[in-house]
Image (tube, rainbow, N blue to C red; front, top):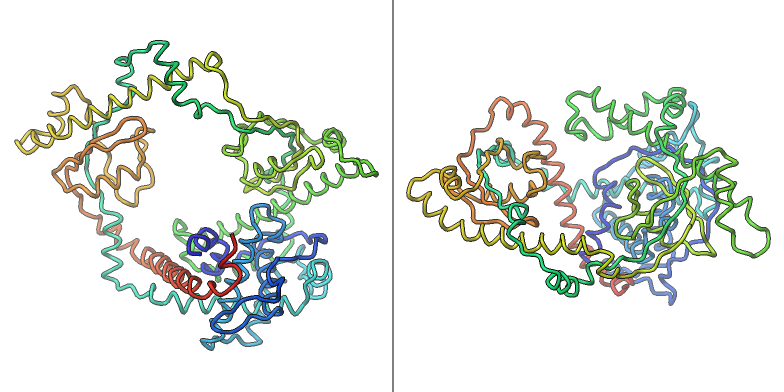
Length: 552
């Protein structure tokens, strides 16, 4: 249970973080009646010794569906990445949180609940108009089987859960100024260091290549050359950049500044660490809202295209032909593109596709050749199946150059790592004898390199290129005393040894300026960690008596 909850805890993160940037949404059409598969035998389990009734489960399910819709512009059972087991776990988590809050006496007034519901409805308005509760019920709730009571209960319980989060995370916020200063120093103290790399590329010339050896290597590692199942799809992309100007113009007609201010008040001045002023933070919120609106407009146009595609489908029971996708794109004047064959592991090469794109593509069949809209961070896609290609292992003659290169690189890496392993003890002894790191390396025919000062908070070191990861360097350096060299550390392409020259003093002026914001961010982080720790433990204790405990 712990692993599952951790995996999907990002769904609850909106509650934990208190993020209330509510997207502008398009009223959605009808969908199937939900059936969670839970309680088929009338048993919904127990929480805190209380037997869960069918109505309590339904209420929690409906609340979670509304929670998800307000933050993702879709119903959770329409997301192909959310399995029924995952959905049920989130429903029971919400049920657990509301029951715990009730047991602790957490209460939300009618006025606060009404205010929260009103803000949600105001955020859905366009052109300065506020969506009425009647319109919201008629266009959003009723078609999906929800009621106004579901929405009111959701708004109330969301506030209750937020108060519970704050209560359970309170211990994490109890950070003294001294502890915050110490944490800042740990993260921002820079080191001066030198490094020497043992790169496989420097040992390639020492590798002997013979056809029998390459053939044996291919036989031993044949599975690595298997080409997985692949799929090729036609697609139409609706990029949000084409909708930004329109979105900005539409938002300008609304109470946009008021919405930005509301979100800024809810998020607080420290939500965007790189925003140094309220104006900069509001600019980021403004940009987020514009992009959300543009993405919604892109989705609306994608829905319009999908409607045009299915309007061309045969009226009998025959499956639709993929060709109608091309016809509809031409009729709409849209650009139709074809991907190269791609696997489920990496997705298309032509662009960075969202995970849902790849999953939807591999779900296409001859009887069901279309999918969409597929929502990405910058685009919305509609796709149609072109062909599927089965997995195969190419014969050696077709990929001999690649196999030969892999053979040489593997043996060159082994030579590089052997050289680094053998050099480390010699280096340590000569450093003890008073020799410098640079002189020892140069005497051995190696090339030591100085690294620019960096700390645990450093985000990138371009000097590393692809020879080692920054995390590897940081872990090694900050585990090595000043004046000493690390042992040899293996990497994918060889390895390295790093020498820590000194630890540099922290810039006191920068620390004094950054510490208030750093402390606020640290407290927020610790609060979230404290709540998540409580949530993990509480869920493991309480959900074991519910149907999700035995679900696979």
